[in-house]
Image (cartoon, rainbow, N blue to C red; front, side):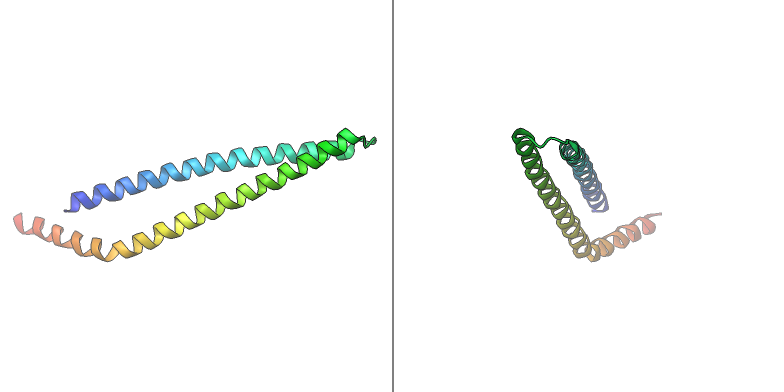
Length: 112
């Protein structure tokens, strides 16, 4: 029984690590994209001559920046929800794990 619980916890930790790594990669990509869009907006704003194409391009980039920021907020909200859900699951499982582990340990002690 303890081996099963140990394997379940190991799998849970591996999956959590994978999800965290993927969310870190996604956040890095989004942050890089956002930085690039902000840089381009600043370049366009710095141009002395505000032609119609520069204004259109700046408007497009500002809209793109807003979309990237929206996606970032959603990603962080999803990560926060996932962490909260995992914490609740772990808290709910803890009493059962605590009861099972000493019982298995006591059986091993009696055999010796």
